[in-house]
Image 1 (cartoon, rainbow, N blue to C red):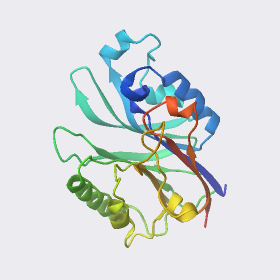
Image 2 (cartoon, rainbow, N blue to C red):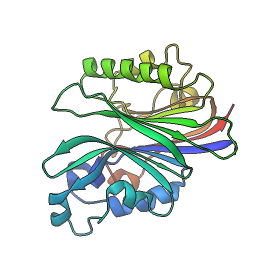
Image 3 (cartoon, one colour):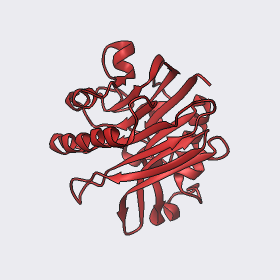
Length: 249
């Protein structure tokens, strides 16, 4: 297997913008249509007892299981924010076996819980496991700088320099400064910067202006990078989904 199709999406806990409508069923259909091998999701609702009683059609299982369904056989969920009636975090859905995973707490405040979900995935025919890190960074620049430092340290400590690596998620980095500090010394490439010269505009979904979401890779050639816009996708969340078709170097 030489190619890998990945998608990243902040799903806004399964609701449309301003939480006006539950969209998790439509979201599952659209993710299936994209047909990615790996799906990086942020703001995934693992449990919410109040939403389950207030919204008809709320899935009986956690959102990551509901979305994975029969398409993505393996999944990992990193619980970040825990509150009285539930919890949410990041998830990775995979068509391939997840060998091991870990969720590193990088929260800078009790008011904003964040984590780095790191999976090692066995892709058929590949000599080394694929390392995937799902990211959702803080809203304040000083917090993002510290979280990126922790991400860099984790990569240097746990990911062999010649191992394939994908880092994707919501970086909240509208100034684009955090991305520059991340790639220094790590031989990373941001897929839209390589194909279009700058990160994609992904927020707000109906009229994207800010470059919040990213896909960084190492050990791959970027064949296609795509922003999923349009009337259908713009109703699913407050973020646009990003995808990339990658080929191993």
